[in-house]
Amino acid sequence: MATRKVCLPKAKIASMSKAEKSKVVNAKKSAANRGEQKRSSKSNVKGARKKGATLRDWFKNEDWRNVETGKECGAPTMYQSPLDKRLKFGRKKKQVKLSVGRGEKLSVKRGSGLTAKGRAKYNKATGGNLKAPVTGKVKPGSKAAKRRKSFCARSRNWKGPRGIAARKRWKC
Image 1: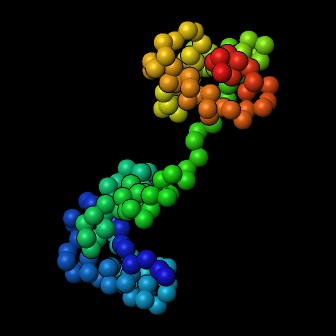
Image 2: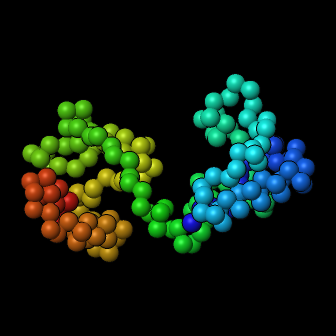
Image 3: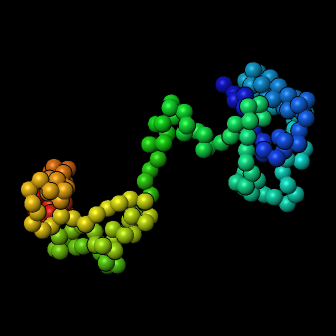
């Protein structure tokens, strides 16, 4: 089914008469009713794009609005519907390349895991909040003890050399 929404820059909508707005909206609706994706070229809007602007500039720099309702158009509103929440969580996290050679993670011999430099790089790139491992003695029931207990439970099935070294470092 074709969309019935018509989006234009806010400044252009403000300069259009009611008749022009309804012409564009009705053209789009009738095209959608016929199952077409695009409205008739007879209803094209003149002067919507500034002289010399590329399409990328035009889409990025303008405040796009629905001609009929006046609401915002495009990606920002896509996630406001409760039905589309699944899209928000389907995105992949940004991959961060960390290396032992650059001092961002520890070798297996030294207990695996990330160094302070590696955690800082990861947190900056992803907006995360990785903390240092709990490696020393802790009071039972303290925040650190709970973090250790949680990590140990999460990493119980880590069977690779890095996993085994990390669990040993955390004293699991």
